[in-house]
Length: 158
Image 1 (spheres, one colour):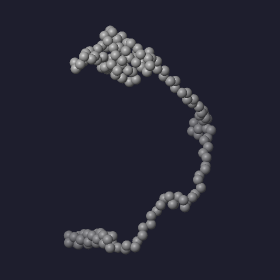
Image 2 (cartoon, one colour; image 1 turned 30 degrees about the horizontal axis):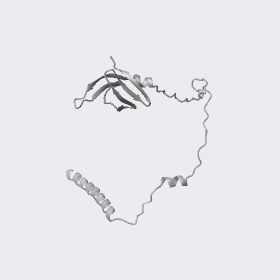
Image 3 (tube, one colour; image 1 turned 135 degrees about the vertical axis):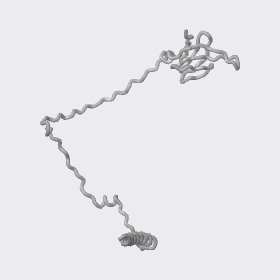
Image 4 (cartoon, one colour; image 1 turned 90 degrees about the horizontal axis):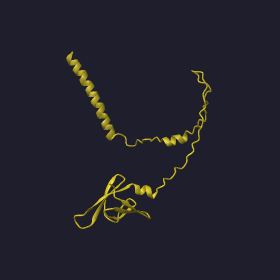
């Protein structure tokens, strides 16, 4: 009984290996004249020019389950208005500048001025720029800053 099972399994293995080896042999040494036909979907669409479905769907006036009438949705036109331009005044520009004080540079005898502009501390020399504002100079009492054509003296904050 054991030997017959072994022979049956041996025959199955030989058939499977024979099939695989035949496929490999046919792939390498088979017919070379076989031409593959490629299918192109675009060409198929042009050949099959069926008419376009122009069916329109009409919605019922009543809900079939609740029996209530549908309310048509009203079309609301939205009007877009241009946003008003933010007017920048000189007072609003200069109100964001706070003069904190000055100190003398260790390298030379020039002064460095400490200015708070929009919650940022800046250390500037005369004729430095921060944003569109030019720092012109200053002393212990106040500083002079220039925005475009307007010059203003800002007193020290206490």
